[in-house]
Length: 316
Length: 227
Image (cartoon, rainbow over all chains, first blue to last red; front, side, top):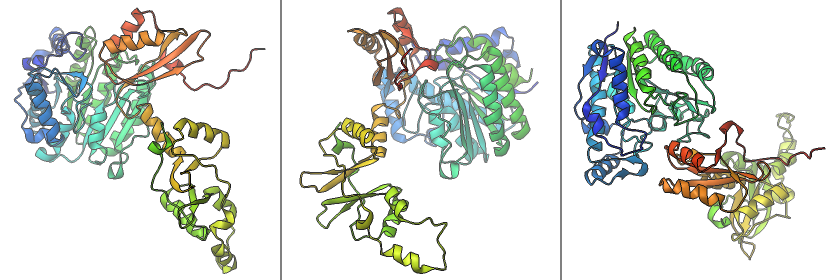
């Protein structure tokens, strides 16, 4: 069994999105329930969080975005930049705590206290652009973790694998000129699904050309298409890149029972995807994986999906 | 939707006395395919396209580097020798729709934009129109496209728009495929939101059918008549 860190904090529930918003605190409670019922919690090493230092947020985000977001929460404006992005007074602090926890996971990983980690956080991050909140995301948790790995811990090459059903536009745009961060995303084809980016020909720019890899999947597809794409696109990219650490943007909304999109993955396919990522991490990255929750909105399916995900991290 | 809002204003031009080799180099360097020909007063005299140049020049594969004779003759050729004088132009108060339909009709890729005195003030090409329609469709703004089947009768669009507006979601664009099936239209609102599940449910409750995305189409060739 591996030493798997687990990040969760009750304060993540304080980011309140009001009634009927899919990105609800209940998502985390469902994740927690799943781990509890599967008897996995005793095996996990708790990761404690504190607010991330601003310098790490600023490693990715424009100061004016950070300030305006803080202000919007302080003034209780109700939403930030877009009616999708419902905020409350606590949202800014919760977002800082989420990043802070992921950075603590990075520290524990790099100091050998854990082998890998799962971060059950909200708000999610992969849509957040350098200077803009989008699609329920304010700070790009994985992007900040990648920069922290490189600048604080001297890691050279970081891969980010994003299997949320929506394209990780924010993460892509942050790193699309950067050959030291490989970004791979598999998602529903952008003509049919938010946010409308992640086409096959988006491959990065200049020195970063080839270090962005996208697998858009047509609506109605399921396990077979995902497995083919991952074997055809992700595995060769990871093999030639040889990352030192793999960050996972773990979204569970491509599940067939999740109504956010039109992809129909089985519960088992999520396990296959995560096991495939773990095998690649063992081959190139010394097993170093930090998985960070993004989307996934089906409260009935989340408990099992998260339990399976964490079981694979534990190597059980 | 007027041409002068979407045209390229900084037009690269040549004079009738410019050598065709120079014009060819300009096209390659600037990655353009049409160069208006003007006089000293910027009055439009003609247009030269990359096809005009290719037709006028011998194949580089057949050029013998040893014989400079041909090369010298080519170097003496001027734009006035090959330009099209009978140019189809468009006015700045013409519309994008005019340009689209005219391009289809004339089978050309760009129109010089001239004022009443035939002075060149811009050029509008397929590239400008592509950009304009990428903007119109909102393709570069984050959002989600829906496909909704609606009866082809008055007031259906209003019901759709009202239902979506009530959810406080704004529209990037709405496309309508008019000839879907007998008495039906397919409506494609591009919604600037990540959160379409509640809208889908609501539309279904209102009796609309959501189209299977794999069956969406907007562009349609004329149907073959049943025999």
